[in-house]
Length: 243
Image 1 (cartoon, rainbow, N blue to C red):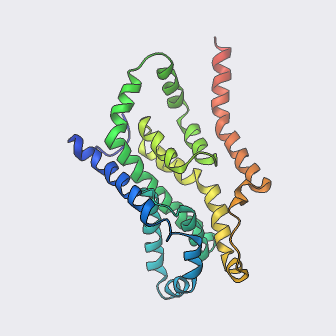
Image 2: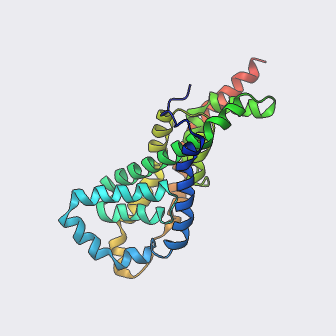
Image 3: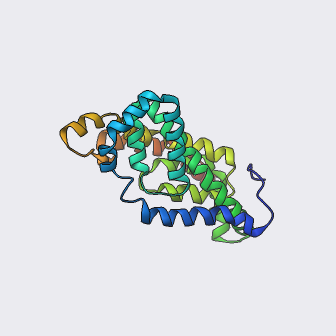
């Protein structure tokens, strides 16, 4: 049995959350793409800092809520939000706030997709035969490793990493834990870039968002990917020896 919150029984009610998310995502992509930008952050930086200094706790709550909304509704500006977290709160606790907002938003998509389609699709995959069933069984046997891999590999879109587990009957607790810790390396890197935005603004420049692909950053993340994949490789090798 999946460890998750029981969905509503009515089919339309079950699909309503994912329909709302998709609708808001489309509207947001059209209306917000010119507002959630680095230039907007640069233009409003003094106002943001003043508000933070006068209302620190409220700023933290509003920031996490905004990050949650951006991720949950797949709105543009997730990278800008991460930079803003570093700019307003430094690398720490800014990274913690970024990770918290992202994990909450990812969990919302996960639950919406599971309620709408995941349980039915998961049952179909479980009842299938041949190659499809073998693939699902392989993922089920290595869920922790697979979940961490899709979070650590920079090439996998965050949105897809939220949807795929919902279709494979991944327990909610496992999804939340792997998301929180799996996105941590990338979040810390981009939050640290945001923490240095003050100097970037002063020079009239833009931050280097390709920093995560620089060798000193990318290689340690790839090392974590190898560690995450190691249990899968070991199981595969043992399985072949057992044949």
